[in-house]
Image (cartoon, rainbow, N blue to C red; front, side):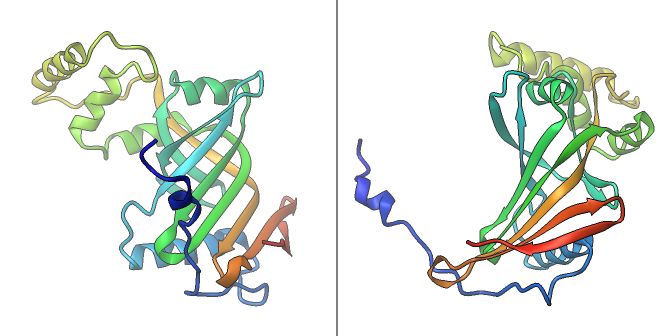
Length: 217
């Protein structure tokens, strides 16, 4: 290969921007998430809502991809997709998932473990109406995760529907909608010097309380 092994081995940064301690974090994890997410917005990061979603199949084969956070509340973290996609099928078989946010400019990472369930049809309809029309049409046209013979047919169908819906509202497909990830564990990672990172973890103790612990880096 053209890239020397040593070049990759020597790629490293020493993190110095901030610290994270038990006495500084919020007692409730969603408040701490909101604080860090606001920091990401203020820093004008590129797509701060991009997050890795990890799922597993029924035979325990993992897969991961980037999706976009579209809301968070006491209920959890929400995103939208095609229910018949690979991730949708895996979620249907095993609702235990993980999320990861990584903001290198802030030297921060957030890991979330929990279970996922579908949002209501009403919530999905409401969000679908806010999407650009082109994205709405794509949700209809794309047989997400299925094999395509070529891109031409996909673009042809998209163009036909763009003309058809030029003066009409685009209906939400029945196989498209939202999910909410209900967290059981949320870890806040702050990079520190010499790889002695701060890792503060919230573990759900019961319905209304969380235990806060520090993990070794």
